Image 1 (spheres, each protein chain N blue to C red):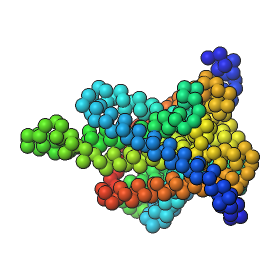
Image 2 (image 1 turned 135 degrees about the vertical axis):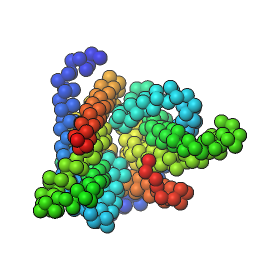
Image 3 (image 1 turned 180 degrees about the horizontal axis):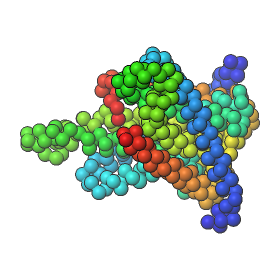
Length: 215
Length: 207
């Protein structure tokens, strides 16, 4: 507990440094999630119409999943240099698989009878997509967003390795100098942020769609 | 690929450490999950408590979890194994409990009727029938841990992450690619081979 007190003291005495790290952490995580949604959701609709592309896209995205997040971040450095942007690109790549796969499966597995009924009512492909498929796939899409958010927040802690800043910086400094209070300056907010996000998104999910269905 | 060529020994050693770290973590996680799962499979309230705790640990990012363990355990294998095996518990606990619960009631009644003790019933009936799901949990846990174990290099636990971190420090892309690609290859290898074992087990279970 004493350590925790020291960590809190440090934050109170260095509010600017702490706020900047927190800001960077949030900025890169949120930007990455927004990018991944902007790429993943339209891509899911696109591959839904072209069956052969779907298999290729899903397989390559699944391959991406096995790459450790540290490696994805690390490889951005020789390609894009250091700073915030390489981290954002890496985190976008991390967030893409759960968003794309969940959205695609959600759109694809809409009950065939429902689609048939809509066609029978004279709906066009476009209308079916907008009024039937997307609303029915929304819970799956949200579940993808939830998984991606937790992964991105975890990935963001590794950003300091490539000069991306964020709360992980305090952990890196803490390990380098064996400063245990500094470790907690990074670790406690990171853990709270991850748990808070998971809890909030879980509650939102329940509020919007009722009990979570098995994905 | 000149560096990789000249340093095969070094890479193999890092890969060996990585495998050791991953296997040991899954093994420890599996032991914990089995005990917790057996205790809580027929006690829904207790299971919910275990699941919540394991879920909380699972959501905490690996670097932060390691940072929590360093003041208690220092650097090296000990905090790495503790952290990595805690991640396995959630995945394995779910599968152990689902597997144990999937044993049909009439099978359990038959075992009781044959005069099996609770322990005999567990070891000879319930666990073997839950085995395919437990193996599936082990597969997911192993693939997850192989990826996360790269971060353990940062707290001096060795493994393929060491090569990636070196690549970052020295701006040497080849090292990053070798470390990352080898980690992915190992993960894919175990994913495929354990899926194969799972299928065999399913067939054996149905036979």
